[in-house]
Image (cartoon, rainbow, N blue to C red; front, side):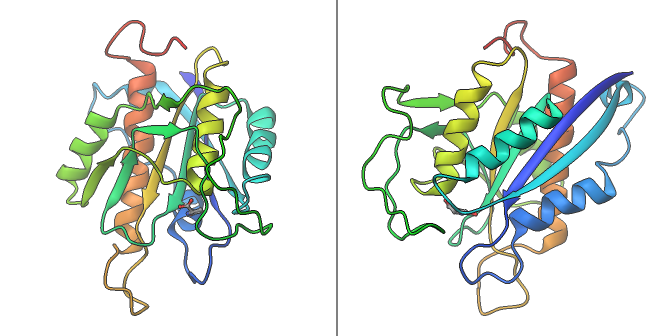
Amino acid sequence: MQQLNVVICGFDHYENIDVNPSYEVPEALARDGIGEPSDVDDPLHDANVSINTVALPVSFANAWPTLLETLDATRPDIVIATGLKHAAHSVAMERCATNLMNAARPDADNALPRFEPIIKDGPAAYWTRLPLRAIINDFARDGIPATLSSDAGTFVCNSLFYQLLHWTATQDRVLAGFVSFPPINGGSRLQNGLDLRQQVRAGRDVVRETIRYYLQPSSGDILIA
Ligand code: PCA
């Protein structure tokens, strides 16, 4: 049985959103777990999974240091970062993070960076190594509306994701990704969105597929940074 440590982070308070899926989904997964293996051949049988969560400030300066504290304390094998996309109608799996901050509104510290790199002289972008194809297939099976997204914008979500992948590139064997959730529908005037159960299910699919891929990578070098 292999011990696998998973960190799932979200944002603690976001504008005037009452129930933030990027806070609720990590909490639900830590509380309720990721479910049973699906059949006898499922690699999930071989994993003893522990999940840690952390809620981050919507701050260019402080989101990443707060996550890094948890990473240093828990030494995870898998890191799933999450955020909220107001205008989204589906769960978006982010494919890459770009080295750009360009805020249209101030963050929690009133910072408003315009066309600035996140890491001076850093690569233009980093690709995630999450098994996006398998995840999207699971979403289809579970009836979860989903998209592949080419970036998480230019606000704090993208900045956090870029710094996470920059850090991941220095680690031996860590898989990291970013999930953008739509608003939770039902309780507000927002027309777009998905109910919380669907979003928790999406989060569970992401973690389950990433663990499977971690244990049985489909290509020999895929986890080598
Ligand atoms: N969404 C914002 C920051 C925090 C969040 O959940 C963004 O799109 O960058």
